[in-house]
Length: 115
Length: 113
Image (tube, rainbow over all chains, first blue to last red; front, side):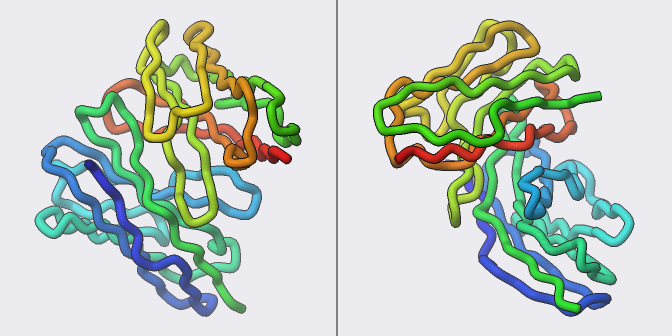
């Protein structure tokens, strides 16, 4: 079975500091896509960043970047200059090419940014 | 641009009652999904529809049925609600293939008492 694992149920960080959220996945496929979603208290699921498995370059979106280690099947999210508005649940997800687009989610990491 | 619209946003049911959660998307996406979110469990796939006219079971389909009414609409039905179905339900859609992400509705908080 294809799985996504987030080993940190909760994390906290001081405002303006940097934090890294971990994610590992398990698949034998070569074609897949990786995503980080943010879920604030409003419950809305918001895409933070995405990474194609065939691209070696790590994706970056403003303060958010990933460290994609394909051989290790690792996909961590780094948030720089953390802001109070980054407080949310963060979900790592994998979309496998052969699964008709289904997203497999990790269990989430609850991030608290402290002033 | 509404994106993915779910109704209702909140619902309380008594054990044994039935209800249908509605979902519609206006992005011309082929694929639509129903997930449930429970504390500490992430999002788990209930059913999905890869294209109009097809539906398939996901990870946790028991107790649910779905209908892909047309390309825009995908409904989830609870025939006889049970307390174990208390959860937050999300509808999502995306293009069938490619790098595009899934777009989510705002969720339905369902409580079965």
